[in-house]
Structures are given as C-alpha cells and as structure tokens.
Length: 278
Image (cartoon, rainbow, N blue to C red; front, side, top):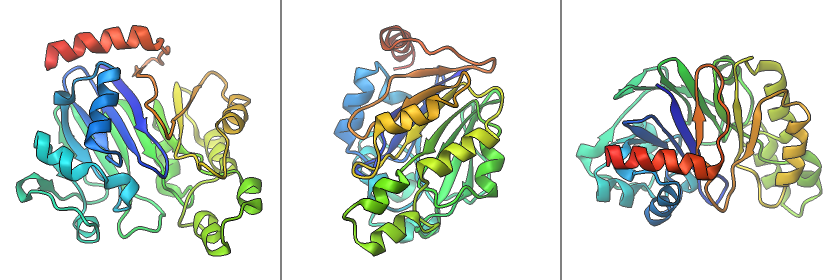
C-alpha cells in the first residue's frame, strides 16, 4: 500500500496538507476555508469523504482557520492537544475532539500518525510523521530550529514537507520591524532556506523521493530562488514548491522510491480512487 500526498496550501495565509492511501486520508492542519479545501480537493479528483481526521499542529490562525466549519459539516474528528485547544479560539463539538500527546501514536485505519514536539512560538506545537506500511511522510513546518526531534524523524522519510520560510538576506534588508525579524529568525519562529538546506543535505535518507518546500514567506523569499538552491543538491529527489496560492499536484509515494506522474495521470488515478471510496 502506498501514499498519495499534496499540499492544499502552504504559507502564512493558510496551511493544509493531505496524506492518504486508497481507502482513508487525513489532513494536517486546516488553515484555509472549508470551501477552498473542497474546491482544491475536487480539482485533484480527491473525495473529501476519504478524510477520517484532521490533526492540528498548533493554535495559530493560519493552521486552524477552516477547522470549525470543516469538522461540523463532515463530522471529522479533530486531533488536538488539550493545551492547544485551550489556547485557541476553536469551538468544536465535544464528541469530535480527541486529545493527543507527543510520542503517542494514533491509528487511523491503516495510517499511523506520530506527533512529536518542535520549537515554535506556540503553546504546545507538534510536527508529525504519517506511516503506512513502512512508507513515511513527515510534516516539518513552523520550526524555529532543526532540533534532534526533527533530525531523527527526517532521516526516516520517503517524502517530507519541509519549511524553507525565508532568505536571510531578504529578511535582513526587508522593512519588517526589528521585533518581527527577531521573531522569525530567533529560534522559535521559522527555518531559513540555509537551515532547511543544511538539514536536507545532512539528514536526508537515500530512499527519499520527494521534498515539498513549504511555508515560504511572501515578502522574504522567492520560489525560484529556493527551488534553484535545492535543485543544485537534490541528487534525484524531486523538489516541489508548496504554493501559498493553490494546491500542488498529487504525488504517489512508494517504498521503493516513486516517480512523479504528471497531474493529468495522477488525477485520473485519484478519480478512480474517489469513485471507489466515495
């Protein structure tokens, strides 16, 4: 059994990542509206009925904006730490809330989700590894530092969503106030292109096939700049920019390494899956 993954949106205007197999799927965060999630999944020929749960990484609005409407409309369980829920503005029906703790695995059908802590200026932030039949996808965004939790799990991933938030020179020369520059780069904010590349070069496993560069700053980064930077060191890994404006293609991740299929081909395959499991 393999995994299908896509970024539905990635950036300070909203984050939402889809990971699923032939029969079930989850969302990591839902920081765009329910309507946008529906539209983007439809364009990828993905059935929203395959989603079995939404996992919340932390309480910032760009990660939770769509959760209330989405969970109420489709009765999706929302997995969120008790501290994150307490510090958020979310109002979720009690029977849909399930608390989790770092390093306690959660089973959703044949998917296993492992949360683990990260450095970020939120009350109880977590990253995630999603495992299906020993195929692992990591979600590593909103990270101030590439700590040992991140490096340990990055080495296990066949594919990963990795933050490359800002170019250090662009941030330094920007008109952002000093306190905001410090917040972004001060160890509890976001990873720079340089930090993300160093992590990728040192800790990527030989079997990694896809890397989604995620949560790019609108003002302090350039998609082409970071794509060129990583392509120069990719060594066979497919580098994808996760857009802040639209969904990426749907990518098929397999244990033996996977080949990217163009969007038309992938959409045809996912359409068949949607019909089968709608």
